[in-house]
Length: 103
Image (cartoon, rainbow, N blue to C red):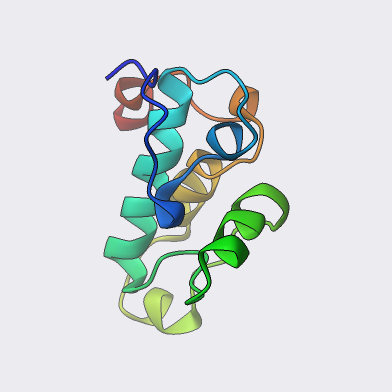
């Protein structure tokens, strides 16, 4: 999509969605970053049974680095860097589109 849909799931919400800021394709990049993080580590970057705490973490907390066992499984540090860039708090610090991330 174009990121224009404000519907969100707390575990995958970009900071700009939570703060009612402007959304665009970089919002989709953030959500993809959460999905990639989960696929590679087996957990979302901000896990908590309380949705308000998850939303606050998306707004305020840096995404945690991959657990050491992920690297031991052979996930390259470069891939971690790609995922963490997708999870940047500021949209301007992410790739402009999912296609740009994939390239």
